[in-house]
Image (cartoon, rainbow, N blue to C red; front, side, top):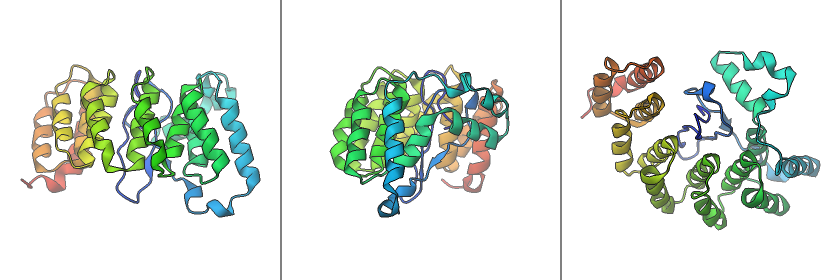
Length: 277
């Protein structure tokens, strides 16, 4: 998440230093504004203890997925029928986890120090026809924290596919280098996907640039409900007293129920800070 929304990949807050960074892979309109699955990157802390057989199997899965169709597994797997109908918070998260193999690949490969695996991930990020696999490979590479992949992520920001562009932004945020601020600002201003613009603006704000906040505030007046809701979510996560007062002004006038619910949730998060300047 909050997985990908509409034709673009949806919102995920960039984590504080040391926190797991949530990842969004796949496209599912029904999963709008729920907390994203978190990539825990288990191998980052125990790379030397991982059995080579595990790496071999993960690499085989990655290779098999490079040219696979991007259709969700749920469309063809009867075993997931009941899971797909779950409407609770946990149910939506489970549906995402088991219908988008890109998430599982990211979880298993993120932060690998294995040279062969890194090469395969880079190959997938550059050449895979399956966009979910490209996205998964990029985010997994970002967890290595190796600056050699910076140009790969920067180049993917111009990809015609929004899933790839979103993964590039997410990878830049996971990488965590100060130089990514320029790319975040460019995406927040110019990306063709409104969802990506908002995600980039939130990342920009987290990096200390208040212009990201100004962009989010502008989206509260956007014609599309999902843009208003996304903006409200991030304002609730990172805002203060001023944002509380702004959102309170929008609560009564909002007509879409999903956007209204997101604004109300954001206000609850901001309430302890409501008297701040």
